[in-house]
Image 1 (tube, one colour):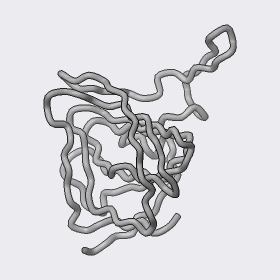
Image 2: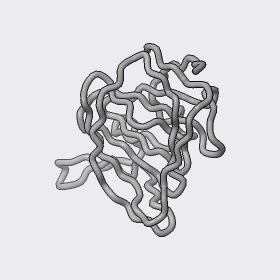
Image 3: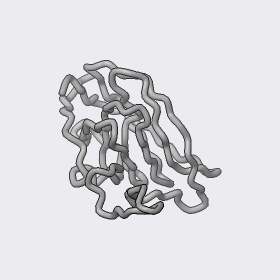
Length: 166
């Protein structure tokens, strides 16, 4: 299979906006003190969308570490609701996404290097690669949709993206 280089870029709220939300406290717009001044609340950091007929669920996903170079040969999307990943292990990880719409090609892919204190919320229908933990087993708190309708489409790429180094 032919490959196309895919270079990770820093995960920022602005760069990731076409694909969903970055979940982090460091640059949160809405935050305020609660609990008698003991706690800072970083408020409403992601648009969680369970879609019509769905309900929001919380799970933990345990991702095995991936080795570089890594070939991105498939992508998936959730057409009925959003899906948020919040790292619990404090380790950096990779996020590969493509715009919502028709099945992506390798040229549509973007790769982000997420810090261990940054989560992501994939907007409904955004193509993404499954967990890409680096260096160690990593746990993620996942907020997504449960419902009776199927909510995962997968596609194999004709030309793979290749994450070599960063």
